[in-house]
Image 1 (cartoon, rainbow, N blue to C red):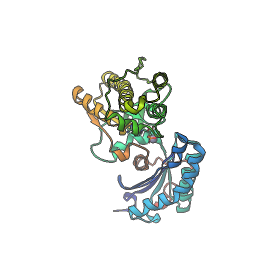
Image 2: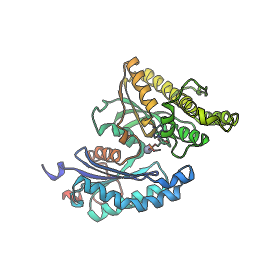
Image 3: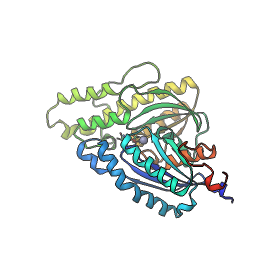
Image 4: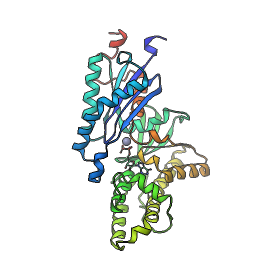
Length: 336
Ligand code: KG4
Ligand code: ZN
């Protein structure tokens, strides 16, 4: 195999509060290391300044661990990829600076990756891979979108949230229920023992494929203000199940509308909230009913990870879509 066909990419993700590095070889992930940041639990949400400091501490050991696990040397790398946004500025800067410095030192190209595009393309890490075009409901802590994917480089957002993201709705509701950050996974756990019909929370009725979650947060606040201090000791699972049901009903209603209108029947979910067991069940159930082929990512590729950055970078590498900040894109291959 020639060097040109033997592509190794190191990818770095640092957009929010996870520092991650992954190594890819010819489209296959060899390593995907993620270091979370416990410090934010103390503050009930991500504190940007603390996140960037933690990235600075984590980035070298995380990259070292990924390279060790992949069993390759720096000299074998063909390119370095990094998340260029969207995300927290201070957090992104740590990954960008590290990637640039390493690419410069190794004289190899840099590849910029959009975080939301990467969540979608996480579906190409493992089989089954969706055919084009497909629709993806991308639900994370910062975004909620329905995206039409025509090819890895051609994606169109056809609906998105007008206020809070779905993950934010989970996390903010959890905070009102006295749960620590990030509350999404905890609501999911409690909901599994609760009754989804116990309480009624509103599902917004807005036209088109857009979403709104701010009303739900307010209704949970007013609901909790009416309860006694002991209420949650017996009703927490029921409240979680009812809130989760309202969020999923809103997401599924819009997704079903988009699928019906576009006639697309290959339907994927992506992003941190796609780890939610209720949403995973709902998409499988509705998919069977409506004749969809559904694509649900492995848990490790739902929340933030560098494997999805590496996968997206691989598609870009094949198109020679390098960052303008790269030194010569073909420097390592002796091209120019
Ligand atoms: O994609 P992600 O890791 O980061 C962003 O790009 O924002 O998503 C994080 C979000 C958080 O809001 C977290 O609470 C939510 O995903 N999340 C969940 C679950 N696991 C993670 N929400 C509901 N149920 C889960 N099991
Ligand atoms: Zn994300």
